[in-house]
Image (cartoon, helix red, strand yellow):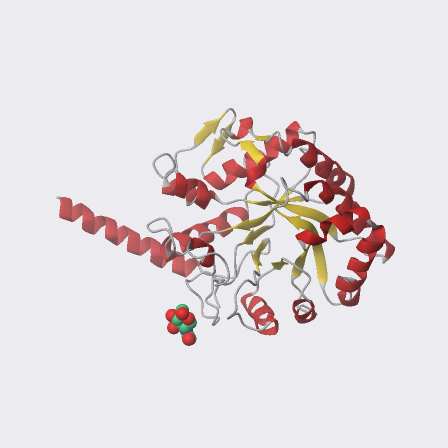
Length: 341
Ligand SMILES: *[C@@H]1O[C@H](CO)[C@@H](O)[C@H](O)[C@H]1NC(C)=O
């Protein structure tokens, strides 16, 4: 009996994986991929951008305005999110001239061939010493863009899920007391400009730190029994976390600000059994299939731009799971079937 059920389970697992392989296909247009560059063995930017193009990826997020990368992005058709370096925030916040210079150096020379969709002032700097720089830096960069006539670019910032104090149930979502004032200032700028807020959201970490309470099915978008929160039904942890953030925004009067998911993903190694190629593949494929046509229960019609973290394994990050978030090895061969290239 035991042996039979074991065989039965492995047949099902095998079929799920084959199914996942068949699903490897062009990404939906609202899925982007983060191009992290903390490796000493990564391909040249031109080869990397060619990989994005060949794979039909819709958008790319880069963490700083590296000129070689921006040069390679010319005529790529990718929608680009480019970040200011965190350490530049104090000057961008305090000086319009510094913000003008940043835009003149990093945006203006490429504007005719690169689609600057988003500029992010700061990556996960709230809370922290740069937090109060974010809102004024956004305003100064926005002014600088306007003065060169670029009006379609959204200026925002990237926040970690660490700004959230309560995330369960989602209706209890709030910002931490430490971040509420800064988030209120940031959100009020975003409301005026119509730009989204960016959020890094990792159901993986919630699951790996509490596998007894959170089922893999729920994290993998495979649950059929919902977690009920008032009138809302949650079939996956990703939606639950994003909606906790939506509720926190509502509580600071910013419920209309849309969310872009700037990072999500699953590592392939470093914390077995939670990390594995199979687990990463199932998460990312099911994520893409989910967000391509669904908003969250609280904002069902709001299809979010969502960036997978990350394109490559990066060997200059801390050892362990941090080095293993890639869809590709540095030699550009893919780690698992996800894209059809
Ligand atoms: C690429 O790198 C991976 C990991 O080191 C290795 O397993 C694979 O064989 C390499 N592929 C090629 C084509 O060199």
